[in-house]
Amino acid sequence: MKRARNIVCIAGLLAVMMTSTAFAEGDLEITGSYPEDGQKNTTIENVAAKIQFNKDVGNKKNQEANSKCFSMVDEDGEELPIRVYYNPEDPKEVLVLADTTEMNAEKITVKDNSDYTVKVTKDFTADDGSTLGTDEEITFKTLNQSRNNMVYMVMMFLMFGGMFFFTSRQMKKHMAEENEGRAKEEPFNPYKEAKKTGKSVSEVIAEHEKEVAKKAAKEARHAKDRAEQEVEEIVEETNGNYRVKGPRPISAGGSSYITGRKAIAEAKKAEEERLARRRAAAKKKKKK
Image (tube, rainbow, N blue to C red):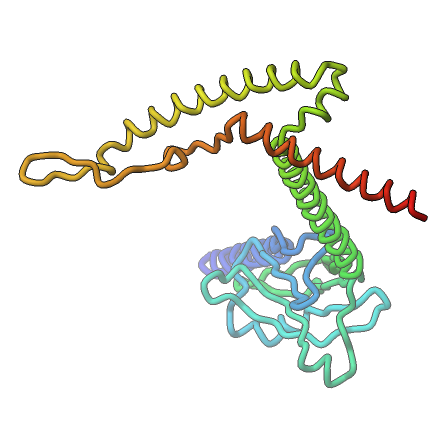
């Protein structure tokens, strides 16, 4: 009776152990990776894949055997030398990194716009003894550097083109304003204005004198207002009395007014000089 009871206990224990082992073998899974499977435009400086599992895999006892479960190949199937790192802060994470030192020694280079695949075999084992069960692959594509350079050049061209366009526009606007200012500052010529409008010289001079007088009155008012506002700057106090520092011309108030008589005199002088030149030229021609 006692012997039969022992046999039943041993059989039950073996059944439990076999069940847990069978369950553990299919329980390890990859839960994520960076880059993700199928991702494009990954860096070519550090070709690597960071893989996350659903169980701890950082057991030092399994690291040597587990490291042999990883491999990395290019799109031609050529295998790249790799290094495998286990994260001490996250025992569920493994980093598979292309060994650039070994690649340079073996004349292997990482190419842009190319597919690379990280493989994990089914024998990869977790700390609790469970295995991956199936072979897994993570494929990603490196950055298309030549296309990115072209896009960068186009963007630079557009940026400099825009800067040139706006600068030219501002320069043209500034020159137009300067030309307009010069046109406004041109001396009054009653003969030219009479020929342009069809009026007599006396009528043109009379209208111009009215405009000049009106403008002078307006500027005088503005000059007076500015002078009143600046009274504190043109007086000083001496023993409680105020006195003016000195006389100031109307230009100190901002006026650029030229009297109508002066403008008319300048115009007449210019016209007389022009007629004198014409008479001299006619006389010279007649002598010939």
